Length: 372
Ligand SMILES: NC(=O)C1=CN([C@@H]2O[C@H](COP(=O)(O)OP(=O)(O)OC[C@H]3O[C@@H](n4cnc5c(N)ncnc54)[C@H](O)[C@@H]3O)[C@@H](O)[C@H]2O)C=CC1
Ligand SMILES: CC(=O)C(=O)O
Ligand SMILES: [Mg+2]
Image 1 (cartoon, rainbow, N blue to C red):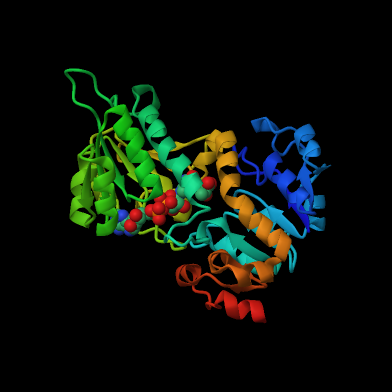
Image 2: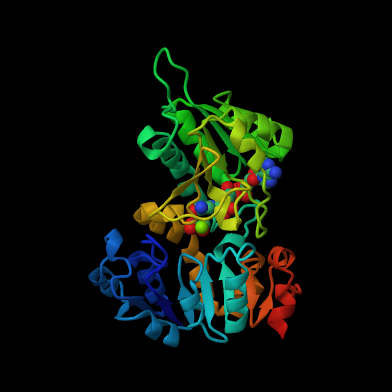
């Protein structure tokens, strides 16, 4: 198969779909890989490393989109990238379609087959291609939150760990999945006073076992969320209903009850955000203020630590990229129900039920779409 890896074009996005090691693996399996000129240069993967791994360096994205059977990316395709996709071409990347009607429409129009990292599943009920970036974003959210609590950044001037004689800052984490757990571990590590809310009792039991009293584990109701949020210095939004738009759990009326300069970091922003007042921001301008509360809503947080993130993402995506390249889309999806769950758009049909629910499309199950 001829595989194309364009350079990412989203604001401050320095990750790349395939690392040199992944290219080497695909080439060893008999495939050809095209990488855009300097696609990984910003994170120390220069053209010579890709060439040594067997890739061909291509000057512009258009030539890659024109020729490749499969495009491997990181972020959802931007409008100009969607325009370059063509019928039958395979796109393997994050999509986050439920909150994004424009991208969904463009992918339907393209006729391409679009497999979304974030809806591929595993045997344990997890999302193996989302997990590595959730680990990164969860850990980063505390770093970002601590930074924006500083006065010079518009924050309240609270040090999360406190000092002897001064109580630590309070961190509320809404959603105790991968993002939430990694956020809580970092916050606990800094010495903060941490509360995690989740609506899954089995998950709360696991968290209780893991944190052994170092974090409070609370059942998520709107009443509990309001009590924890209004007492917090830093709130992390980390809920997910796979494929679907995030529920709005932190509502606008709670903001005036928070201490001015408190920070809310909505990691779930790529699914539309779980705070009513969230709107996506970029690494260049990560925050804005509503009712005195600093909002951090960067939709591609792992792009900020792009080298670590590219390596972590490739560890998870490579086996699936290999399966798609070795077997072709139809056979790879027929053989693996978990990978099949990643198919969101196929030949103009929307094959992810949660996306159809959010955007009003007729749902065509992947099995049915693939037969047409
Ligand atoms: N902004 C960014 O750069 C990044 C964003 N993300 C996003 O972060 C979000 C969370 O991802 P993961 O932690 O991997 O998901 P996950 O599936 O591991 O965890 C989500 C948790 O939310 C809980 N939950 C659902 N409804 C809830 C409610 N009403 N109250 C409390 N908890 C509730 C679930 O029980 C689950 O434990 C996703 O939207 C993901 O796309 C992930 C990586 C990077
Ligand atoms: C998960 C995601 O959207 C990201 O890593 O940017
Ligand atoms: Mg994202």
